[in-house]
Amino acid sequence: MILTKFVKLKWNRNNKKFYTLKGYKFTKYGDEFLINIKDLSKGSSAIVKVQCEYCKKIYDVKYCNYKKVEKYCCHQCSKKKEQETNFKKYHRKNPMQNDTVKQKMYQTNLKKYGNKCSLQNKNVQLKVKHLKECPLCHKTYKLLSLHIKNSHNEFYKEQVGLIQKQINNLDINKNTDLTKYDIYLSYCVCCKIWKDFDMELYDKRVKNLTSKNISKAKKGMKMSDEWKQHLSEAHKGQKAWNCGLDMSDKRVYDNIMKRNHTIAEQNKLKYKTGEMVAWKTGLTNENSEKVRKISEKTSKTMAQKEQYNSRGIAGIRPDLGFFCASTYEANIYRIYQYYNKKDGIDYKREYNNIFPVHIQGQIHYYRIDIQDVCGLFGDKNQYIEIKGYMNEESIEKINAFRKEYPNYKLIVIGGKDTNPDIDYFQLQEKYQPLIPLWETKKQNIRITPWLYIKN
Image 1: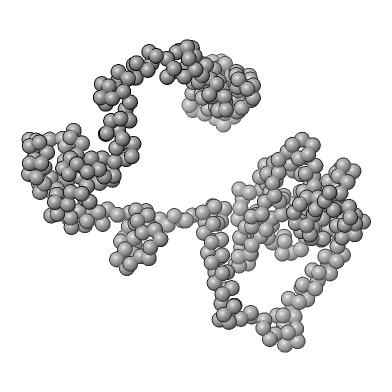
Image 2: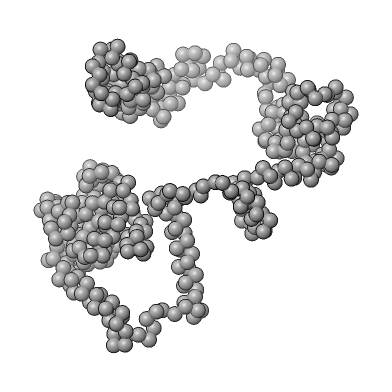
């Protein structure tokens, strides 16, 4: 049963004539217009809300798919509908319970295969197993060998005489369609036929090799120089698969992460064996200006964190059951938990929100705090960055992420100093009375840990 009464469509060249004849006024291409569901064409791909006739659940379905069936049912109720139609046709839930259907099936099987059950036939058994019987040696083999056709002229000239003798003395000439006889020849079994043709066929196969076939055949093996040459010849004139792609493409991202992981593992071994040494071994603040600047920078950031120590408390929250980097992050997850208990909104914690970004010609890895899967703070699957304070490094990372990944939406939740999209303190005013374990300067896992002990 269809529930939608009106649908929005856009004017285009395909639908202009159809809907103007129905009485709708044309404005311009690309404009939206409201249309009655009764006036839609049968092949329209407009999405409408449909109710299942059995379980009464509502689903979004294309209108053209809905019009194909008389009575709509969802995937879960398809068995019920199948039983209902069978009962109308055959007066049984299963057609095999009807004697007339059984007799018809037995008669057709006897005509086609010579048995009541098709699986008792030897040819059908071989087909099911993807096998075929060789007409020369009467042995079974896989259906991956050469199918003889008139296009194989060299093979035809060499072997026609041998085929004529061994297969019932058939009269074969150049105009004969060999596909009628369904002849398959196996290199493994019928070696006599392939004896003279072996090297010529190999040369043809090598010329027709593609890079995909070579990579499948040689997967997990070390390539020889000869095969590398074949691969390079196959790649000539083709564009690289990653041409024009950036980090937003999943394949490019996975390859870079895999490469970086292998480099990191190699470097770990080198540090253990002593092949590589840390750059600052033997350097101090007194004899190295670079070390002194880095230590000053870290001490400043630590001092800033001490000013806002209530929001920078990292640790496992027993009430949530996982680690949070700050009180802000923990409180945002408590909002998700609150709606999960109240309205049943599903949420999941993401661990792999790490994106490589380019800052001043160098690759930095940016870890985003939360992925809003259920769309509680706006759009679904948007990314959320929680900031108690904003430094230059975090501003550069956010700007670089928004440039390099325009398809992903990133919003900032924080105080007024961070120029946030959503103000954290407004959320605090709203949810602190509702959530008793909301962390503040006076109440958190450091000052009042007994409140957060898991019951």
